[in-house]
Image (cartoon, rainbow, N blue to C red; front, side, top):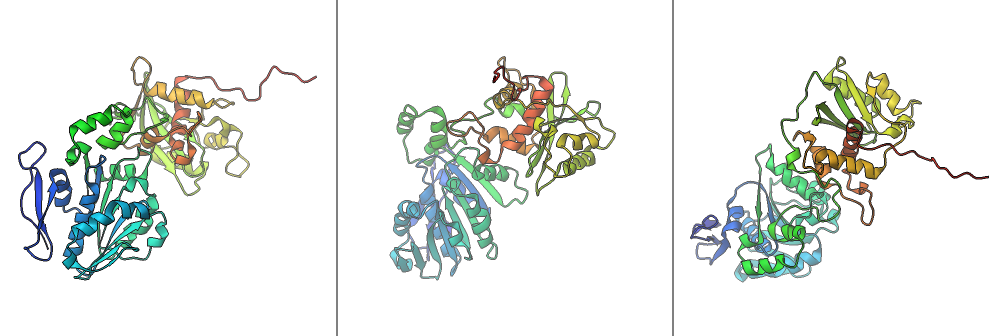
Length: 440
């Protein structure tokens, strides 16, 4: 059984620790958690996400959570998961063995990193480098430690289904790993959780109470700003090579809305999956991006045009600003170009015959987001999640000046880029194949 034997205070309060009795009887020795750990421990939500700085005490909290689960639900199975088997052993195995009294242990396997308690519950430590090997288990609870450094399939394809029959709980604990990770997506999802099953916290290294302020300041003097914020202040940072360097929350506002008397503007990227469209109106010198269309499952340009018409009707004047290469490319295999499909659907197509340079597209996007004078000419509605994610997370491929398409977030950026280039006329198209050289 688990009982709270004391109270803990908020930040700066006199009482700093949560004292809990955790064990088979009230005669058990109490365990103390610091106030920030206590906030997480005391929450009764089924799914919890903790983002914390280095040496916060994440692994100790993990062990306490697993022991609580094993005591409260006899005969059940609980997992501690780390990115690798070696990490699981090095981070949590010794702490777990020290935490569990010997009289509660029925058996212990040093190779499999498994402890079985006398009430029939088991706590197992796992590495997720081979996630498929974890399939088929039924779990009542799990801690995913350093979750940001695991593959997304660990949660979505393995652990989440394993919790279903027992309606088990999950605690995600990690330092951040930039805004391009699945863990950041999860963090954002919790903020708008429609199920009310989730809760989240963000704590710095100092909040954990295990590292002195003097030591943290010494680390600050040796690290660059972004690395320090990520590792010690639990901030989601893009450490290197962010493409949309001018983008910030100042570009996001619910003021971005449709103006019916203005033509509807579409930025279009003819990718097969997803096919991406950015929807906006322009009023004066400001571009208001208020919607996006992201079609998956092999959608065609015909499908895209039909969806635009369904949302905005046939009477509206629609100006499409697509990828210029769509004027010659026939991605649908029906003998007609992508641009021709848009025209046949009643849209006005504004696009040069030659493509723009990638560098010009990037520069134009950043200028539209905020120019050198500090003016922001683009306002984006919060509902445009794909575009916002793209602007926040798209980085350059290492050692190049090209956006990293392996991240899978470049399509909304490209669609937005074509719209900006056409509407603000910030760059001239590149003439492909033109040269003054002649072979005689």
